Image (cartoon, rainbow, N blue to C red; front, side):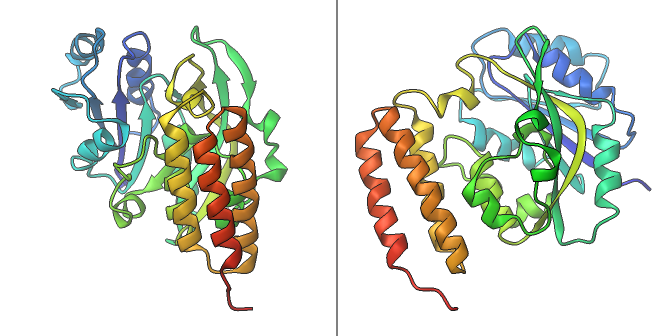
Length: 287
């Protein structure tokens, strides 16, 4: 029996794109998929679009929320319904290519249980679905680490978030996404990579859509709440670090975040980062 894969599709005001996202799951070459669609109280036509599109597919679970609770909490709400051995977190404006699930499962079956997360190359597309570039043009395949990549994830971003597929045991061991944060990927990478290995598939298996004012753009906009969440993840990193190399990686990350804060005029947060830098530098780890 093939392992069950649960795809959780989270929608918030993505009426223009959600049909394509759902269809990309229904069109997978893999035939043992559970799909859960959750709408986080959209104010556009998303709910009616989803309901109409899903009429011929009663096996798909649809969870329309009555009030907006935020990305992380909405995902956790849907996670309760997920029965799969593996999970894909699909934003309603992104697209899975037909073999994403089958190749993800095949990859996991070549590794032992210590490997908890698989990620891949991707096409970045615009609002009309036109390809802008390949993720690997910015992050070449040969530069992508595998295995224990905790320190590398502290140092730099190189994973295209929607390409991730992970064992359900990983997300459940973390207690789901941290609902106090404005976004989930950086925190998930850090907490999961502390205890699980990552494996990379150097193929384009997902399309990541770039939309102005989307979640991924807010982190680098003025006065974004995401900046505070990034700071809180850095605090977590300091508590999770075990070696001087990891300590140095965090120091580099903090310096980068201070520069970002100054560029975005987030001066109080920049001061908090400087204090964190001092606290981090004072820590002592075993040789």
